[in-house]
Image (cartoon, rainbow, N blue to C red; front, side, top):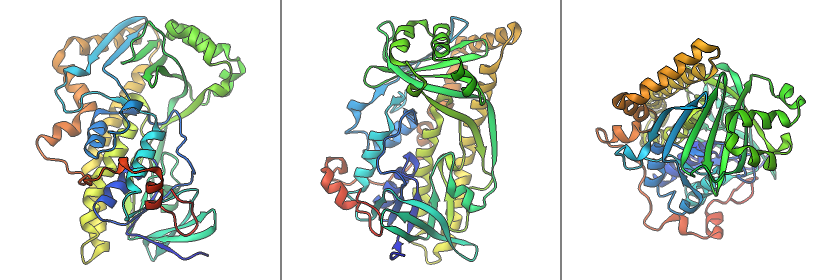
Length: 438
């Protein structure tokens, strides 16, 4: 076994939560190792909608300045039920520093986070490396055992962070209990060119009975499309042939029928997302904490998963960095991880409750339930204060809270990390002990 890699914090998972956390900690002079099993950030149909609060955080972190040409602002939201628009929202009416959601494919975001981290001596990214077991001393987690391209090795750390997503292996290894709640639907995703009759800045939700679709403009001139199917129903749908997908789009959004028939000719042109939520009563144990989807899996409704993952990372970094400087580090880190859950849990619970209400509303069928659903949306749409309060709670809680209690992120270095060359970033994020250079 190769020599152990040592760091103050070991982050397992190089997604939005893991890399945001690592960058924030490294900027606070905390040594961090990120363990990431993939060699590249080539992820599609995952977390492309960045909520305004996350846009605000990433702007303050200096991450978005070199990515703007790869983003697209969502300026409006439109919900239609049975062919009639029942709710509209214009995000420009919300007086916030960052009012608009952004569409940003995950690969460039992750590359930007890794590149900025790679300019800092405290940041190390171990690609093509898998965490195979937790390292423990008594009841305390003290790191992870890993397998990389050059063999097995260990990472020792005062805190291990499970940031490895909705199917978290660290959560399984930790022994922390959790409750997985499957919902009544799964989602099929694909991308097609945007039709000329649609503007490129409106997020559309189309509902017909118990069927619904999401139509999200994205870069460069595409629409990301998702539609619901019964839980576990993909095999049955595929057995009907690709024409079944075409027929569903004819029903939900005939404006894109031609684009769908041209771009989606086989099921291999689609991706399926298993929809469920996960509730973890305790996000931490001595020496370990979960963040993002590993701690609280959310559904795709209103793009809240990535938003809460990035916010988790910023909050945890702020709390853990000073704890690692305490004389009794173990006790201080334990208090910090408990405080982290206390600070974040209520916001996550509100998002989950809202999503579950929307899931139930989307699933309604039959004349009377559908009529009630349409009436509910229209009532919200007609009441400006109600609509403003609801959307502000979804999209702007952090920016609103900042006006009362300032929210700190780590100072951005005077020399912008994003201006570094790829070689410079790779040198700063070199992987020791069994992993390739970042």
